[in-house]
Image (tube, rainbow, N blue to C red; front, side, top):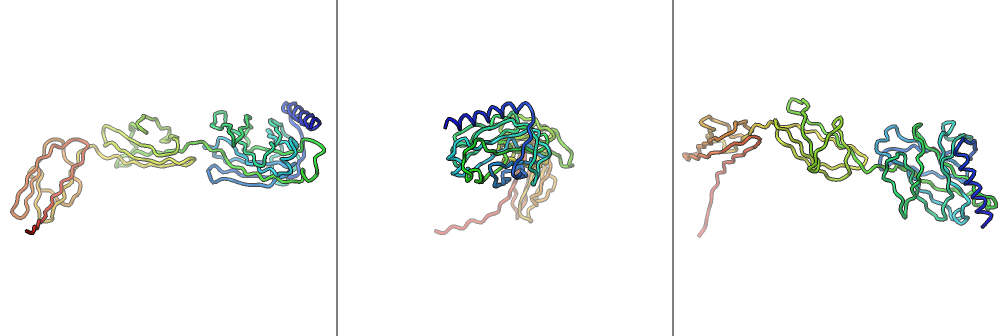
Length: 326
């Protein structure tokens, strides 16, 4: 046990020294994973103790804040404490690809595999991230450079005297993105002529400012309110999904009051002595007091309305027949 600890310490110390400069190394094979930027993006590779994994990132990394590796460790490996090391490299050259085995790069992190059969680690790609350590997840407090569009990981033997069966074992590694807990709202606000209309926007009763008609929100149901003195206020309930874009198109309606009258076809209708249709179509009216007069089968009905700006009024003339039995 003491010998193994000494060898491990030597490995870790050497690795620390090598962070100051690049090292050249050879692996058995390179597994290439192309990562997507949604919740369905997940790839599993089989890798050996002296293999590397190159994870290529999508061009659009708006929602990606890190990479998760779920490593299934064979029992024969987990039984030998500190026998295999996991490393992260920066500045890998040449560009990783399947079949490439010789590399040069700068080791920025190294740790032995834990004595457990499953190990989930998450590696941040941004300084500001929500990744946290937990009883299920290990956060790697190292920020690998992702400006070249990929990250590189390596497994390697960490001590001598380990049975060949151990180093011949394979690990199953599942790679997927760690996504920000955000979704995007794209809001288009226009009038009836398809002209863009500047408006006050409230989400969950709080004023917000959109950038290029876009804003990022936490997933879930949100209440959207759009207000403009020249148009009617619009209210919507919107659902934001993680790492997805929700588009909302609003056509603002005029603030002029509207009246809709529905009545039998034989009825004669008048609005302030002017004949109107009983089709139920919207009529634009002015603010103030108005009189509605209806003539039907010898009967006359008159109602007075006090019309207000920004309101819609519906008038329904219902003719019914009541039959009773004693």
